[in-house]
Structure formats: C-alpha cells, structure tokens
Length: 253
Image (cartoon, rainbow, N blue to C red; front, top):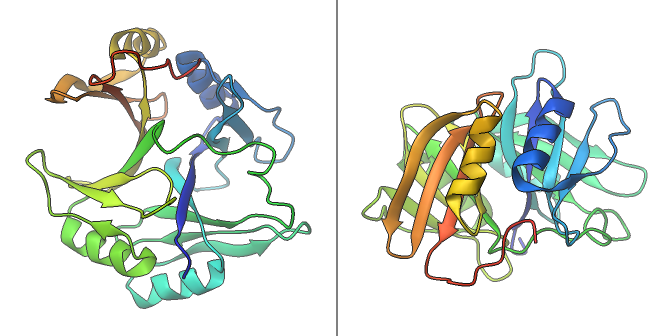
C-alpha cells in the first residue's frame, strides 16, 4: 500500500451547527456553508488551509471525533481491518465524482475514516489540508499494545515505545500528514491537538463558551506546553504550544 496519509480531522455532532460555531469562535476558523442533510461544513484557517469538517450525527450514532486517512483502496483497507480484529461502521461509499469514503472500526471501537479523493483531487485540490505541523492527533486505549499492533500492521506506521510521559509517538512516514500518539487510558477515544502560539488566550475563549478543563496547562518538556478541554459535546480537544519557537505564527493567522 502507498503511504497512507492523515489529511484532516472530522467531528460528528449532536448539533453540527453549534459545534461549528464553537470551533470557529475558539480558533477564528471559517466554515463553509452546510448544504447537505448532515449539515457538513469544512473548517479552514484564514489562509484557506482545511483542518477538517463537522457534520450531523445520524440516528443513534454517538458524537465522536475521528480523522481521515487518505488511501488508494478503501475497500482493501477495510478488509484488512476486519482480519486484524477491527470492523466496519459503514462504506465504502462511492460518489459520482469518483470519491470513495468509508469508516472502519478499530479493536477499541474507535471510528477511523478513509478517503480516496475524487478524479480531480478533491476535496484537497481546491482547499488543501492544513500543514502537518499545525495539528496532531491522539488515540487513547485501555490496551495500547493491541492498538499499536493494529495500526502498525494496517497502515505500516512506525509506533515507538512509550516515552517518559506515557505517549507512544506515531510516525506516519514521509508525507504521511500529521503524526500522532497512542496512550494508555481507562476508556478509548480519539482527539486532536491544534498548534497555537500561546495557550491562555484560546483557553480563556473556550472556557468562556462553557467548556470543562481536563488537563490544565502543562509543560510536557522545555519545548512543548499542552492543555486539554472538553468541547460542548464532551469530546476531548487538545491545545499545544511549541515553546521552542519564539515567533510561532498564530493558528488563525
């Protein structure tokens, strides 16, 4: 398989429009007009780089955060996921323009979305994904060894041993998109970190909108500070400040 590339995050929400308002108000992003039954809107920074999208959860589907992995053959990846102890939530679905999407289930029940762009390279040809150093993601699991084996075999990613903070860094390879981490936790979940120039202004903005702090600003190392909050629907949202860059550009610049 060609190098699977992480291209964007994705949020399915109980109230998609309210979640879109929250993320645009906190980060200063823009959202494209929602024009489909799922009220799906693309989120982009002021420069037009796309971070992902937010859509309406259907039926009894639980709201959740996921991320898209761009692959050449979504069906083959889904088949491999089943053989490795995962499953399929839906898809693959083929669109008239040639785009194919689907959602696999990892052994913990997390949904990971797959995408093959359309014939013209959309949706990334006209609105490219945010650069790999602008965000990252984390998968938490009660059994990180099992999850590590699953993703290593499925995508060929290199996943290191846990570091001193309990994170196993994930290297998605050359041009593999944003890297991530796998960490031990009592309950499985997927969330993402957004790189910001300074934690406090974004935290104040988020807390002003009624969110709950999970991890207060913490200097993980001399190079990185992080904080984690719960968004209005209870999803984890991480903020990461790279302190080794004295002139880091704001996320909404």
